[in-house]
Image (tube, rainbow, N blue to C red; front, top):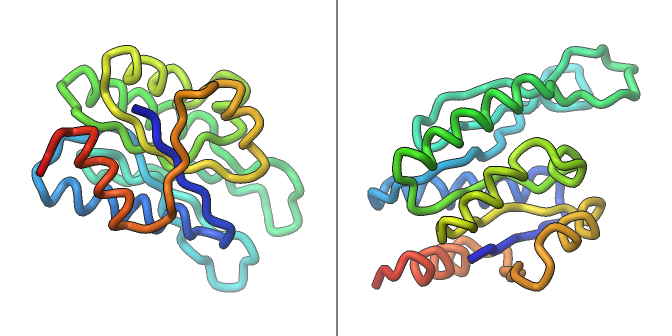
Length: 168
């Protein structure tokens, strides 16, 4: 009930999960979670990160403005936690599938979407998310042998979701 996808290119996992969420919503599926949208900024080397909250489509910034030369973490943890709270409400309202942009540093540390993922799995609600190479070890420690790697292909991801939702 836990599927994950990994892609090497910057923003590729985000794009395929966004397309997946859009497709599932267009099919009338009840989702919870968030997908990431990276907005390039003119003259800046780093993008502005936003979460598209599911199912509402509302956008929430998760980027701190630290300056172009900053080496610190740009994640706005408060923005992330507000997104998590909305995803928790969507799960409570009867979501049938959870889509999360990634199991990142916050989740490895026990924060972010980690508790939501665990609660969804406890309820029998399938979860699909992105993982990057840096956080794979932490994800494996969290998920154990229940996580299923999926090919980074929209058709494959849709088939996995449909199988978990018992849709023909």
